[in-house]
Image (cartoon, rainbow, N blue to C red; front, top):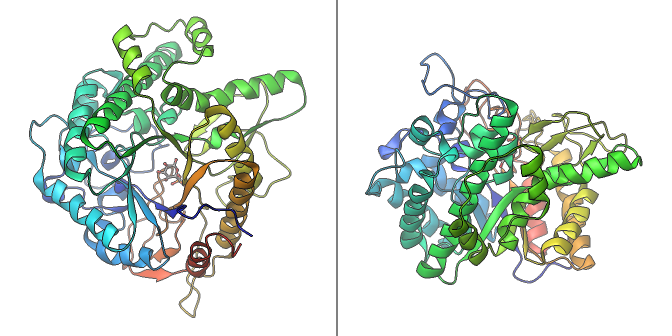
Length: 469
Ligand code: BGP
């Protein structure tokens, strides 16, 4: 017998830059994803667009022109909600205009109305790795406080326009990834010594905390019934010590804080005590004012949205490279891995939900979880994605167990219900969808959509409110 609440938000998640394409349509400005050719892990790109280079975001899967059909396909699975982002540069092409771009607003208005007609509650990420490029070139992104009022103006416009259509919001996608992929998550080009780079990252984080509080304040005034959440990558919080050596155990806890820190501050409304030590040891000189701290305190976020793909293993002193999904640590002999080397760990999800419940006492929303896999269309025209089905069923079961443990879980949105561009690598080959899209890494293909075997399985899970697993 499944334990999911009656109004549980089953659905999916995508991001504008990974799906829409139409990167210059209807007045859209250039955003940071538009200058990335190989995925957000591929360093810090220049701002120039090279005509001979392939940029995956420019066409993506052309969701911009096909969203009516695509949303119908999604509604066919019985989705209760649909998470996507608003592309900031469709609304404010350079981020600095005083008036918004009406064509961009009209586009999202129709999209959200379509979702509602199809029975899906829109869940919106306000900024998902797609800051207008101009704000990076001119101010070095969130390194600068100049972005705070610009983000506020953007929020005001979209809250006023969409407040009646959209009830669930998240301010920044995976804000904590500013520590590992600062260009994508913080819109900054870090420079100088490692200490200086760290300083830039923490300053950017602080500036985004302030912007998050401003957004919460605005939301209260403009759309008092809306739910304002944050979005943190929590794959890095499911970190197991490599050995029982207390040094490994302690170092592991410390590294988990690289994820918790962001939720601690925004959900509790104040910096955690361990931040003092981080500042001291790294000689951080941050521009943090008393007024800003008061604002953060007064307007904490209401729920914790997070992504979870995989767990990792950590040994003290071993350096870790960041990635879209957490820490690249030691091997875990107990777990199978995806083709991209990500350990598959449903029990990690149950563990994580329990930890987050105990730590925050606020509603938890799994807004990204999924398996990136190589899929092939067989001779009969089908895609038999057994690995994905197993991943889905095992994670739904783990979620069910966590709810029975007492966790307050409000919803689950699978990452990439239709194949989209991979954020980490820029590939199409790394597919998450229940619907296949005919397109390859070089941009060739008809863009035709084909339902995979997993499509019916997720449908059944939703229809039975989880009991079919
Ligand atoms: C998260 C991002 C998404 C997404 C996902 C999967 O970090 O929020 O945008 O793409 O990871 O990562 P990838 O596409 O690299 O497999």
